[in-house]
Amino acid sequence: MDASKNVSAPFHTGTMANTAAPVSIHQHQDAALVEFHVTYLDSDTGRVRREDFQDLAAAERFASAQLRDEDCWAVVDHVTLQQTSRMVA
Image 1 (spheres, rainbow, N blue to C red):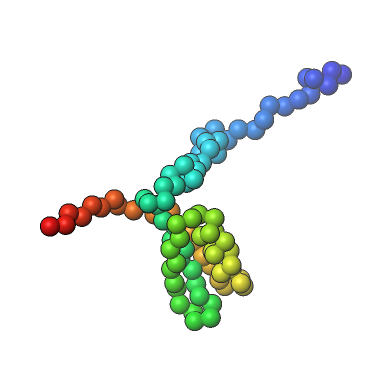
Image 2: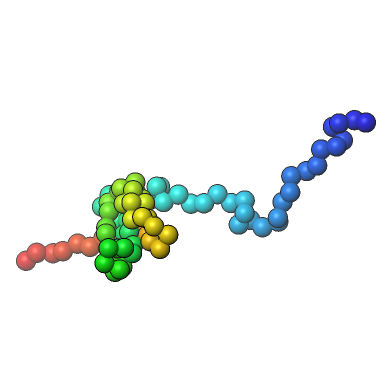
């Protein structure tokens, strides 16, 4: 028996969602126009809080540090800031 004939084709689901590469938020990192908001449950007080970061890595480290037990959660949101200009008279 020829072993090369015994090879099956890879399984495909037929949807692009499973094969398309995700868009990286790193490509949009302009320090002046992007912030990362970490919303999390403060397990000490039981309140939902938010911290803002200019750096994605710092936001992710902070979010991970908030996950102290199974009831804790944290979400990192990529926020594009509106560029505003002010005219001074």
